[in-house]
Length: 161
Image 1 (cartoon, rainbow, N blue to C red):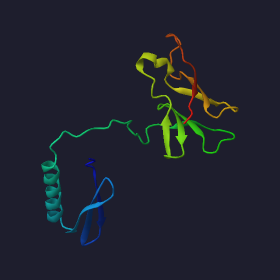
Image 2: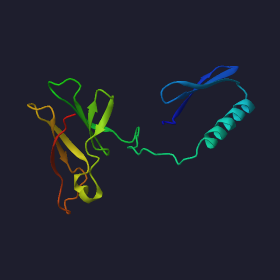
Image 3: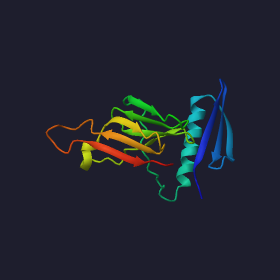
Image 4: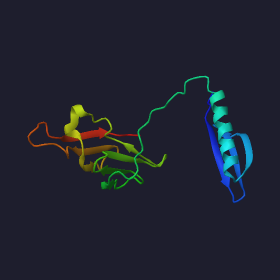
């Protein structure tokens, strides 16, 4: 049973319409509140008590990558010459990504790099295979030190969706 709830607010000058939906989008509760601090606080307290009363189990967490907005810049974008919407991007500190047109998100290609293979941090260049749209080559090692071998490398990958 999915216990996720979504709260929507329609705020007006004199009233606030609050709608609570379950994970399937079914209306669970609807209230109209006066736009006054005391009324809003009372409603908030009622919701908090309801959530606490219904919480008999520990919540289950789903761990995902943190979405960082505005923490660097894109150093290059490559578009495949004959496949529409097949894009790759490299960033100054965030690694390399492939655009997923179905989910409208960037998929990380280099999140597997760890401190143990630190010499592969930082994408210098992205090269596309013109004969196979799912082959990509990444020149890795932007942040390596010349005195500490190994010093980067070329990574080849088949990134078929």
